Length: 167
Image 1 (cartoon, helix red, strand yellow):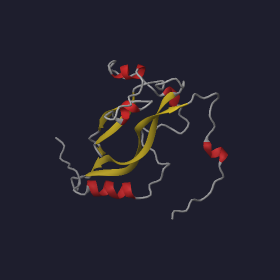
Image 2 (cartoon, one colour):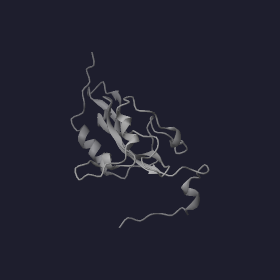
Image 3 (cartoon, rainbow, N blue to C red):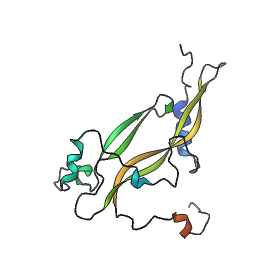
Image 4 (cartoon, rainbow, N blue to C red):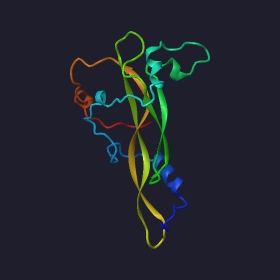
């Protein structure tokens, strides 16, 4: 039997971590490296009913949702992990490999780094779980992109390394 419990200020810790200037280079175990090729990262959704929308033109009625009007529709999937805070994260899943319409574009995920707290141990003295700061990549939507004509180079090669100043 597990005798540890969550620290009472876990949500406060997460809020402070999320509001701080967290380092964008820190990666959790499930983060894909910068060199990963997202073109090969698409998998067919399990439910064939979901992908019927891919062969239909985007909806344009006044009561249609953003997803129905999108060139690259998606659905939401809940990701649950009891050893993480937040325990539930909603993630977008692209339904189509190719963009709807006649552009010949592809649908690609839009990813965002999200600060999380990851459970690492149970403190035997306090009987509280201990958490460490981590960053997890979360897909927040899908967008339409033109196909590559050659392998892309990292954008950092085209920009001078400068310090940014917040106003």
